Length: 272
Image 1 (cartoon, rainbow, N blue to C red):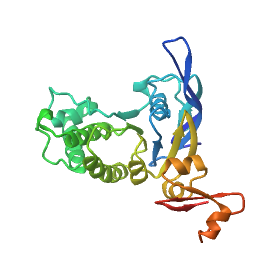
Image 2 (image 1 turned 90 degrees about the vertical axis):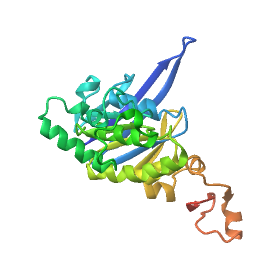
Image 3 (image 1 turned 180 degrees about the horizontal axis):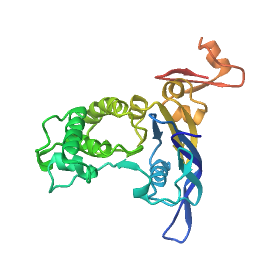
């Protein structure tokens, strides 16, 4: 039996105001193993958020399927999929304190169990003792950590994160992304993380899938993709360049170029 998430030949289309149709996700396959963190990386309009929303059930598929552990969930309602979501905006409940926000998805469980789970997660996200704090007293980074704890509280079988740090300033994003991976791994959370930020994707994810114009251009282990992007388009997106022909590269003493191929220069080294 196939374990984890399987997206097969997914197509998402939107109607335009002029009566036309735009294909946001164009026949994309994606597989995420249990406990794996996969980043969907692409520029604005690449289709990454549309794909995430289709996995969640927030957008209908024009064709294709979404399955979990081999069971087709394409037709299931959002709340029946067992998936969690975290958005750009923390979307905390202002009328509840931090602890009650984190415990929101735990209704129906014994009070002692809820309290222990809240305490465990606040410790994990670096906010021990914040349970009674008003959410209106939190900084932006603290609010996102509370939102993460709330998303993890019911132990979703898949966590979908839609650019959760993009509203924060650069230094705070860098600080939080370094802590996010360890939290997800400590809780053995299977996750799909949408971002346009290459540093976030390669710092956080086990595997990175690059999207452009609704299509998947690459999908590989983070280190492998960074060192060996499969095409010039992907290499250029990752910051490689300029690209030199094999003869010029050889004259400059650059290794790795075969006749008829290009060598790209970049922070990741050389790509042929």
